[in-house]
Length: 210
Image 1 (cartoon, rainbow, N blue to C red):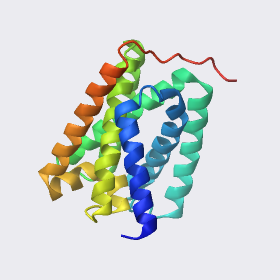
Image 2 (image 1 turned 180 degrees about the horizontal axis):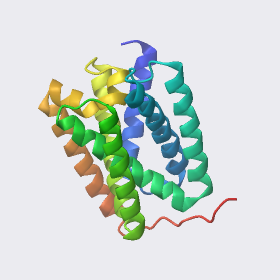
Image 3 (image 1 turned 45 degrees about the horizontal axis):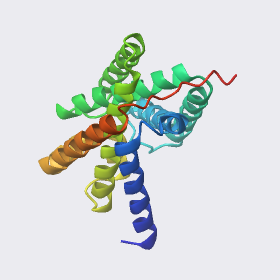
Image 4 (image 1 turned 180 degrees about the vertical axis):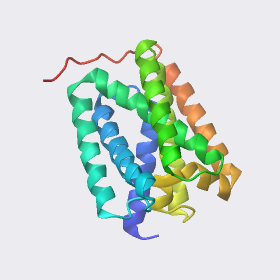
């Protein structure tokens, strides 16, 4: 492993640990950053789903990814409620695409549609039922665990960048059930730790910044 890759691996692992075990307390800081990365992934995956190209295999996918990323990041920074909706939607999208992956389906247009529909449902339910805290706890725990496991898999050569963006769940299960088990255990530990550490802590929504 090169020194650069080692540094990237250590940084990614630290980010994953912080996200999984302390994501809720850092939510306001994470909101535009999360919006950017989710927007980039969604934009790039949209091009993949429509045209069937590999993830980030074309200039168009990069351009669309950055455009959607910037839009989501700015909206998340300016409007708290929109940021929460995008955040919750990212969880729904990941669940929808992940479930399709469990059935052996790649990132096709159908998979993308399912992901978007589930994203809208989760975002709407989060706002209507006022369960933002629990969605944030769950999403950060899952996201952090995913970063940790994904980093190990990437560093060990199990997955490629294309696998991470397209359907990491399917790749992980195809390689070994233990990767999935490790992901679930880490997510569970992170969720439990955050529930305990934030029992008396609530994120204070900010006023619209425009």
